[in-house]
Length: 275
Ligand SMILES: [Zn+2]
Image 1 (cartoon, rainbow, N blue to C red):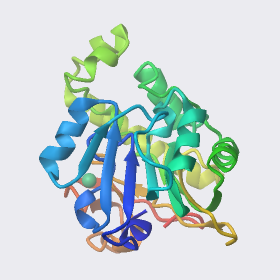
Image 2: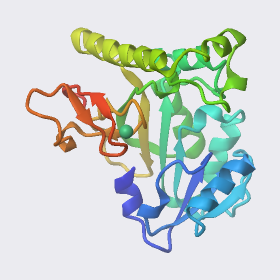
Image 3: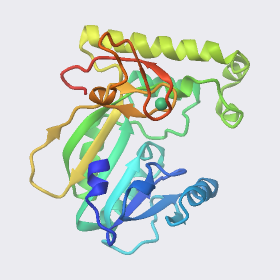
């Protein structure tokens, strides 16, 4: 995503649709960014961080923008939250420029991670469940744009941390009681699942450590390319890192210190499809 955003100039507009408090670091790019969300408090947090960003409170299926005004639309972990998914995709097709692009990250709605998340958080706001081909076909049909690149996104199970007070209302009553347990119990559970699932994935060659996919769409005839997803995703802050960048890990790599939050994580060697 960074590569696609970096290529845009100051006259080009990017829409962060379902932005929450900002779905990526806006400060890295010169393009004009508009954050759209239906939650006023999230948009207020965006403005506190970067006052120069435009924010618009709107539902995703009825966007207050003219036709063909955005060079790039980003739906970063938001598509699974939009109740009116078909209308939302049609709106994206309407506001994208003719040569515009679309980046979507979305969980595998039938994978272990998303199912565990939905089970623990009573859906956690996920109202749509996608298979890879379903989301790609739906976007092609309603946005009129082709998938040109994609890569896997790997799990951090960050939602297994001890719940903060603002998450408690979303938990089932039995999990609300569990939330009283000490933080180390949550850390141990997250660590065990993180390591166990990756070990099983390595032994069985199954993609069970996959959280979802990053999908890159463009109106072009280029052939579809699978890129390598980052298998090392920080358990504490959720940031993914290419194994080659983890220079602080020693030769007998077992742990690395996350470049973003500086906390320790177990290190996993990349496979043929990961980096
Ligand atoms: Zn981190």
